[in-house]
Image (cartoon, rainbow, N blue to C red; front, side, top):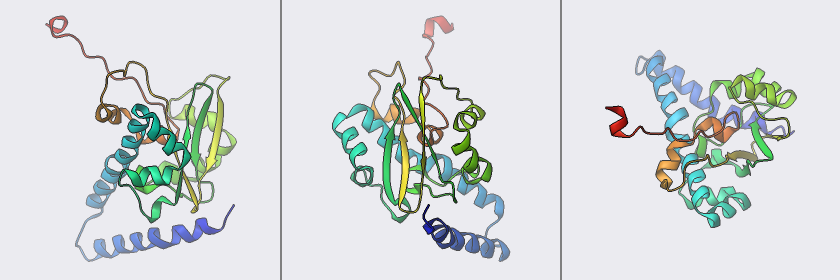
Length: 208
């Protein structure tokens, strides 16, 4: 493993933490507001970028090939780039293989396409168990995979960061790229979940 993990964490992450503490101390912001803002970027803004990439790959075979060949360029093609992205690599889930992302030494994470790393991703419990017991970790998130599916664990670093290209769920034929993106979650792009099929709407007459 490269020692660059620690350098990456002590740079922007340390400066952000120091700035947050200063703003709170001076009474310019409150911790609750910062938590709400962080939650927005963790769950909505950032992951939406990755979700758009996944949806594009599901609907455009040429883009999917570019994504799997060079995810950094494929992200930039859609306007998503930045120093936190590192060298981005996309790994594809199939009927035979399921991928899981972790950073065992710290919490390197593709902020550009997945937003802020969730608290559990940075925890020692996840970082250690994702390697030693990946199926157990996924079960904790509610995902149980058949024994015949190979689980591959990818260890991120400051140089290389990963995004999972989940399997397209059934019953999504005819859905637009935007509608498909709405189905894709951050957890599915980390590998602790799969993308669920869209909720079926009940015909109006049946609801009456």
